[in-house]
View 1 (tube, helix red, strand yellow):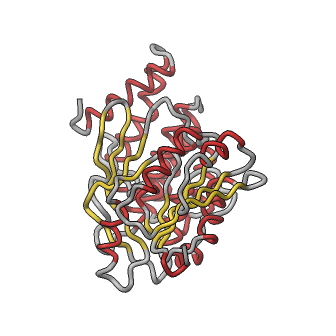
View 2 (cartoon, one colour):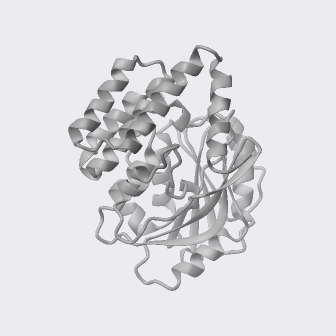
Length: 324
């Protein structure tokens, strides 16, 4: 396929999940848009994945095995640098696209000469329940950090930016603003905060569900293994990218919450709350969240094993969203 014929390059970083990868790749190759390529970046030695992906016979599939692991961020960057499409569409190896995902996004992008990114809604699938996300898109002029963290209900529900597997980004822009190499978690949030600081950033939001985020509770995801101290350090390194209000909510949601789950002493969690006081951003809503995240887990921990505690909180959150 000649470079000029490629409209979209799908980039899938992967490691040690051959069965899931095949589902993801199939969802790309079954798109209603034909002038695409699918770049699979195998992040380090992984014979099983290499064997599995080579069973697919399609000239649009490009497999890039890396000699050593570089992490998800750099694996995406590798794919973007090799891409021949005008647009790069990201897909995690355990997610999948609906057949018309690229067609609908490209249709919306065609009406704009300045768009650098197109995103859409998705299905959050887990525990036998499908939830449509996000609950809303950022408002015009809304700070991205405020949207990501400060618009949270008293009961813990947040809007959330469309998941990475919904992103369609101009290749030139992605090369200008690459993913932070070596960042082992919070990769998508880190990229968004930096991308939104670029003067040419222009996002088109498509109010259609076009992607399935397979959020099975039993599956091992990087986000589930983030140590609260990692999130805390990352946030402080990028402090200038947050409003004070968003930073305070981040400390509660991404630091107090996992700190409680990971057994951090209550005095450490209170120290995080005191940091919010120093920011001048402690509100009744934030205090309720602190009570929810610092109090629910220790109380349940005395009565329930960890797995049962996780299931209980997951079902509780679903009920908060009107699902049963």
